[in-house]
Length: 458
Image (cartoon, rainbow, N blue to C red):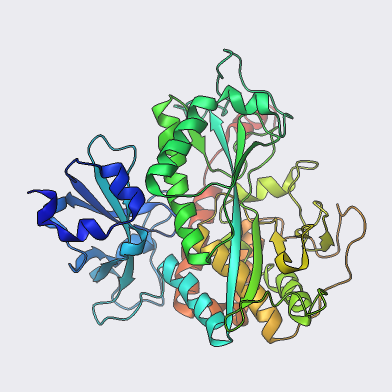
């Protein structure tokens, strides 16, 4: 089949058409982000795909833990009928699978029930639900994510510690090299390939820097629509993994992959504009802070406590918070250009006034983390919640420190009815069930630390 027999190809983004060139499109991947934030879906020859085609997957893919175990949900009737859900390709997300051997297109799909209703437990729909609440008020959020991750030596035995990779000098990466251009150049071939893959997909990168850990990189994205940026984070995680594998290393998005190295975050810059005027509602006509700005902070302080399982979704996520002196805030205080607070107000002109959420781990599902963070600010604005006084000094201890474990965080999540109403009760029930099951599974494991220190010593 020639390219001209598939007229829909000509309407694809320019970046994809440039990638395709005169070649024939061979394959299309219809994908959805699962609860973890990984891609699930179907691949097919290009002649089998049409933007108007209906595709199906079983709903049970949302009933699995990160280890692949299925979870029984008490609130779901006839759960194991495994009813089909409908995939609707969102052609605005169509982009190249730049690492594929043959020309391949990937497209993110929206999920619906067979009756045509949005599937409430699908992460992308959870974010859309929150954005709809903002739109009902005449507001439009704008976000910019920062993605921290590690390049590591391939870890083939889970019982062995993760190690930094060998760079171009033949030496392993060294920690405490934040902002070092030499350290970035150590892994230049991987970063260059990330740039190449991003360009082929039409994904924009703002900056790339070396972070404080050995082999730890940060990629900053542009300020844009939250759904678009969640899609881009979803694509970038896949892109970065593939670029690393092509060069014989792993890319890890664990929150704390190495004991003595800093954890990895997904800092999120957030502002809100008035849809009618396009003005930042955090800034008034004189350039000062508005009530909406303070209320967004107040809501973040109150409700981020409840949604922490969406920002730090695994047992490992809380190791990032427990590492003293490792740059991860353990509080929800706020301060101007203060990196010890969970909520930082970056230096900026009034038109760009924003709130940076520094609590989110890179191991999050980006759709759910962005939805949870924006939901917290939204509830603060509609409920007119005032923040605590601004932190003028370093904050290493607070009367309102974050929960110390996933189990403690889940207890708060399960009890907060306001949050559950905003995110959707059905989604919250399923998500909580999965997280409790993951925590119970982890509790049954015997770790190397236990074998090392308890086997012969107690």
